[in-house]
Each structure stands twice: as C-alpha cells, then as structure tokens.
Image 1 (cartoon, helix red, strand yellow):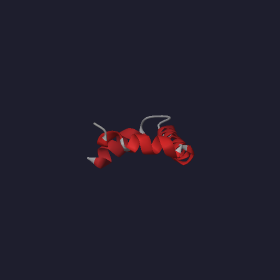
Image 2 (cartoon, rainbow, N blue to C red):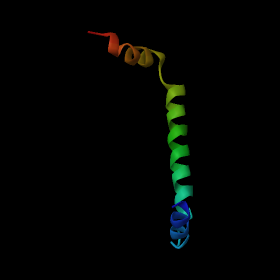
Image 3 (cartoon, rainbow, N blue to C red):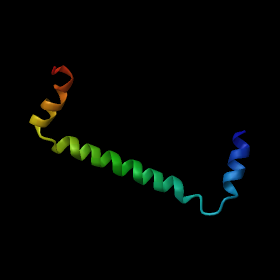
Length: 55
C-alpha cells in the first residue's frame, strides 16, 4: 500500500514543496505561541486559569 502511495506521489510534479510549506507553517505557529506565552501578563494567566473554578 505504501509503495503505491509513494509511486503515485512521485508522479506529481511540484509536490516536493508541500512538506516544506507545512514545516514552515508548523514552526511559525509554535514560535508565535511560545512568544505569546513568554510575553503574556501574569495577571491574565491567573485570571484565565481560575475561570473553571469561578461559579
């Protein structure tokens, strides 16, 4: 089954760019998420973390 998929994918021209695009999107998302976590205010984090406990 994997051999069939591999041979089919190799026949498509220009498909080698898609793994690079997905890697860039993945890396950019997690870098942005990390940056947001590092720069988030402590008060906001405490407020959001206590939301499930508020009635």
